[in-house]
Length: 364
Image (cartoon, rainbow, N blue to C red):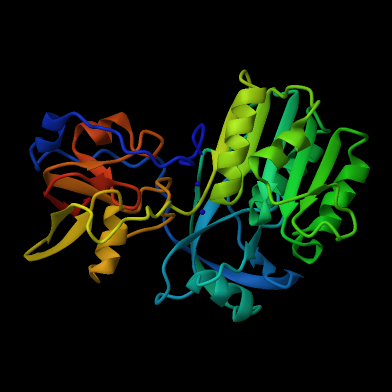
């Protein structure tokens, strides 16, 4: 689901310092930063927002910051997936979830989950939060990427709109605009502090300001003549994020850029790519699988039907953390690993890549 200050939006391999990965296995594991325990939340309301999107409300409480997310597991048979809150702290808890083609969790939630059900939740996670004191903010959202932006807007509304905000909300069609009525109400109540630009791939939709998709040229036209913001928040599909990132850095080089994505990039790797053997040692059991250069270790393990723990799958939560016994798994700098964890030989398999044979064990 991830923030660079930024949550891992760009997944780029980085070289580690080799000797650090051969520290004694007896060294104590660094404590995870505020690692949350899983809790059971009861679903009190399910609201159909669009043909592919639902909002869930819960009989639960949680301290979090606008922009953060939780990991959700509707049943023990399904994997964990990351979803942002679509309301601000202090409001009734709400997650707004869009069905992803082929997504087991999002399909279950949007088609089968009903009021009264209990789901497993872990969190909050993420550093995709607005800095204090910003006076102007540009938000660029694509599809379900608008959900943390709506949480930002509710939070700013509670504060009396201390910042001037422009939200660019991009969608494929008008009937897939998530919480459009709620956004309109926020605009009306903002006293001119909130401006929204709607971009639709199908420009025939009522209320469309620009025609998408959000290619680099379209992004440039949307931002043409816009006053430079202090902060730019970006969340959406990978292609849109790449286009927006490039234009924003060019147009507003002094702006603080926040990026959020929840799905790790699965590299396109050919069958003839160089492959390395990974040894997984879990107590008395040892399993081996091969990972091709350029693909994540987690993706390779799944291809070989080897089970590895995972959560957000974007390097934000740390659920997939492993300890290196031998070799090296390159984990991007933007991940949640601390400097101490890196120094003691920990890596993340969800976004980590291997360039040589290695041996790993589950983190204690």
